[in-house]
Image (cartoon, rainbow, N blue to C red; front, top):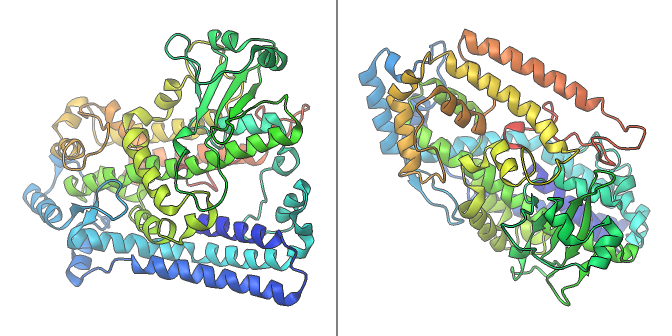
Length: 549
């Protein structure tokens, strides 16, 4: 929620600044609007907050709270298998599946499910209080300073929106290089390989046709090759947002762009080639167009990209974790070590769907106030992404997804020289998998023990059956397959002695990685990881990286 409030406030500041607020009274009315807007959104969200029954709260404490001073045990080693089975039966009777008005994967219902939802919302509300207050104060200060922005009459004026502002919400400021190099083509293209890497893919010659045409005289002037040559050599990449065509508008402008990127044969850089808008005259823009026209095309593409990124994140991370965790609650005893690790890693998971329903998607909500498309369209778009590709569990394993899009591993064409997202995320991913391997092996000494664990097998059956998890493994009968699943949805937990040792190694690696990120600077060419800005989004000391990758 804090991110959305910050985004809202920055949009309000930009709108208010378009007409200079020259008088103190005008500035006061704009800051008052911040209070009214946020109060309205929060009040609507509060209407969707569930209230736990007395019995539900008691069941939550008895059946789903973490163990205290007791060892976790796999199913075969249970101290009292009868009591354990009876407790799970009670969970299944009181933690059931239901649906939200916004759709998405199944959501917890029943007395125990409602109590769990209420707990997650309460924890989330506590955690966001200080960030919300900081964002609110920053927003009011930025509006008070609106006279400094010159009415946003020039492109350079927009930089002033972030100069000396948002100091509480963004104490480290924007990524170094963003506000000075934002018009550069390299910055634009490298965002596809860093902050927004989930849509771009390499075009595979022979298996698909070119999505749109670009005149050879233009591509030769830009790249030294025809588009067919780029395609044939595996140098051509594509990102497609045509699925945003025809979405219900809020009155703000948006295209439905698709774009080509390419690996330059001489420099090895990943660069933009062309952007087609798919609206109006359906123009194709390239770097050979006028500076302002080409910048406009990149802005239009980024508007589409930002829309996609928000709802893809919601579908691919929160939705997937939400339903996998629900299936685990119904099949894994709280005595099971997997329950413990998943419980830690899905903290506040069931607050997010309610936040989306009561804060983002409703008519007049946050989406309506910020985006070119309505909140109801955001809701529908998220659900379409979840059911079509974002919700696929195994297909979206970290490197599996990147390989499938031709971004890493053996592929037709030259490798990408700099891939900051993969470079950074792989460090986190590798350390996480090492931790999970140590964790699993501390409880299971053989593949046979995994296959014989009745609760794990029940979890698989639940995911494949009633929970309707998309593309979940049809079986988990080996240590490696269990590690794969846990690595995909989790980061770390504190268990027995072996796991605590693995945790120490994990934390040491993450602290070292964080120090490396904080020390990053520009090289002699003014680049960092091949980019004209310094990217630190996966800093383990800042980002909740279990749902960032």
